[in-house]
Image 1 (spheres, rainbow, N blue to C red):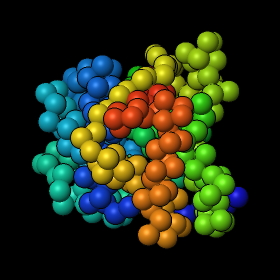
Image 2: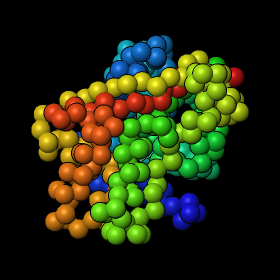
Image 3: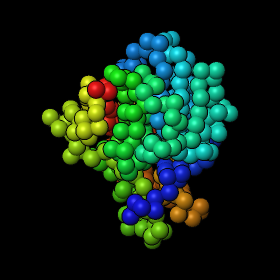
Length: 275
Ligand SMILES: C[S@@+](CC[C@H](N)C(=O)[O-])C[C@H]1O[C@@H](n2cnc3c(N)ncnc32)[C@H](O)[C@@H]1O
């Protein structure tokens, strides 16, 4: 099922401009975890799956950051990043995090820190991706990962909509391309990851972070979800509003969203160090 998965379409439910304008949840989450875990000290930073570049730009402006390299599998997102989130100390490239052969040779052992925020759930080859990021870090280099798990409210809502009785008829050709972090990987009362250890990392912390975000209007909430629900590519335009109503009810039933559109996700956050 995964063999034909087109990585350039990973997540890419909408255009770069639309994603950039509807990623306030991702940005507020990223800023919170970066402030919590990353102490910058003359760092060279790699952002794997940089999307439209806002996180790279934010990191590049932090005192103690020397330079940032951001890469993404989507050439459209990388062009957008270069155009709208450029900075003298940021470079953007197209590369696939799970295929080290797409990486620049000069990235090997080059970075003191790496981040990857809301990316690995779109990546089937997690071990390959972790090993590839590992190879870019200097010895003792740190990594910060945020990824949804198979127990998360986002994943449950996303999958429920993929098999929803009313919408299934339109989704016959939709190959679900979301690969959440398997909760079976988390050992020791969920505060360690076997996969990270197997890929050469020492796990410094691993936990599920609850993060809430209010939206000013139904439209804002809808566009945020449109950006990460590729299902909509298969649903006729005149039925989108109805699809969002069902999505809202599904999310509300598991307390992912409240009646006033406040959305509270539960996201796995890993902080680890290259051994
Ligand atoms: C939800 S967006 C997150 C982007 C950014 N980190 C942010 O928080 O706004 C997921 C990103 O992962 C990228 N992506 C998916 N699969 C990838 C892969 N195999 N290699 C690199 N990037 C990938 C997508 O193109 C998309 O830009």
